Image (tube, rainbow, N blue to C red; front, top):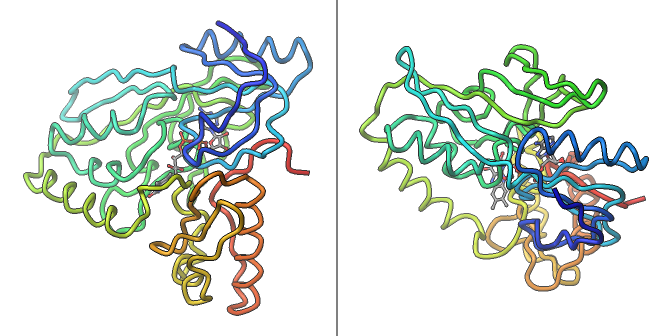
Length: 296
Ligand SMILES: Cc1cc2nc3c(=O)[nH]c(=O)nc-3n(C[C@H](O)[C@H](O)[C@H](O)COP(=O)(O)OP(=O)(O)OC[C@H]3O[C@@H](n4cnc5c(N)ncnc54)[C@H](O)[C@@H]3O)c2cc1C
């Protein structure tokens, strides 16, 4: 496996933003993931994992050490067993591959998965899901086990769903580690309405979200019982712009790259939005997006 130097990460993030990784590799299997980690350890450099890059803000000053991009570690094994569709997906498999398998059989998980970009590993790490009252609506509901490379022992461990702590857009109990694969299943109970519902949900998303521009989806978590988007909108911040980054006029929780945005532009917007919402509503917004690289 090649370990490259000084690779521009903007080419690996959905936002099209980010400076270079000191070192960069694209492992294709768990052996190569371990090899990469051992390589980094032997040189005393840090390891950062990148999935589909749909929920990260990479610093303009780049990422220190080795970035492992999981997108080539891709593959989904499919089986129908004991009345369930059983999938074994490696971390870099696109979520759209799961959607395809569920949709083909008219199974309910297709409905929430159809709106989620990025990879399976990122889906587990973020407990990705949708706000709509559909069932299932988060990764926790479809995942049976998670396989990780334990970064303390460098052993591969399979954790049952109950050994992982699943909360809103976050999981814990597996760190320090790298997610290698997930076991996913759902009862084989076809619902003839699923294909239509998926089409309708896609239409709604296209009409409400600025999907024509690079973003990271929702920038902030919803501070329950509020909606982050509604608070930002009520604060009059739609259209607020710094450099090439803008609070989307279409959906206030999306910060879009309208052309040549820097990570520092996005960070300046995030800080401004948090300050205004705090002042106006006494609500502390927390980012859903993960900051990678040199921010200090
Ligand atoms: C247009 C758009 C719409 C979106 N809509 C939604 C939505 O409706 N609901 C929702 O929940 N999210 C949404 N998102 C956010 C994002 O798609 C999800 O959080 C997704 O699950 C992130 O997956 P990823 O592979 O891109 O992860 P990345 O963005 O690459 O990484 C996210 C975090 O996980 C870590 N990570 C990734 N892979 C691994 C691994 N294998 N092992 C260890 N750590 C890892 C990274 O270091 C980082 O901290 C949206 C994003 C966009 C751009």
